[in-house]
Picture: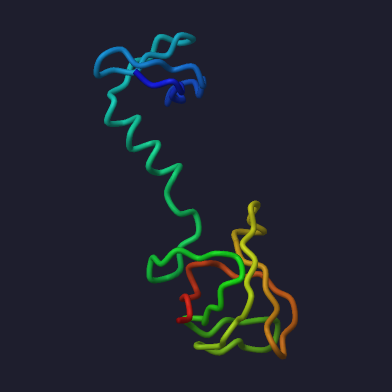
Length: 118
């Protein structure tokens, strides 16, 4: 038995409790398997920001772009190095990285178009 309740996948109640191999929601009476609850916890605990290769990114990392990106009338070339990225808790138009790029200034990028630089 867990001290922490599980979130009900049906009504999002945080008060789900375990009874044998099942989780039960006291608010809507929905029942779900322990495997579903374990998978849900792994997803929540898993890395939130992954680069194009699936490598975990952290604020302060240096990355390189994986393809040419149109920035206004200019193009940010593939392989451009971007230092000291900042990961955003709240994405801006689907972009989850805030950064400054030499020659371009401040901008937002998506994790899916960068790779972590070693």
